[in-house]
Length: 67
View 1 (cartoon, rainbow, N blue to C red):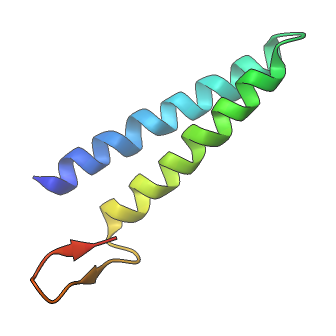
View 2 (view 1 turned 135 degrees about the vertical axis):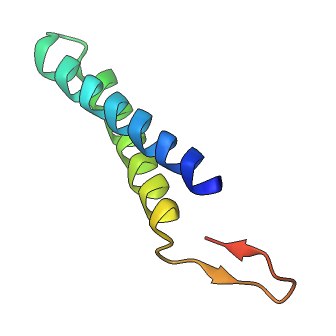
């Protein structure tokens, strides 16, 4: 069930990144806002993708998974 929610996060962060990149190319004068926001959501997209695929995770001594 955890993977499902992570994949939902990947989907929405990817869509948000695509939207802000698109808006950054269309708006004149306010592009800085859209490009910074696209970088933030792009970083979140990569982070959610890594968590969903299990990349970089380790099991702690008490059995919890740490990303």
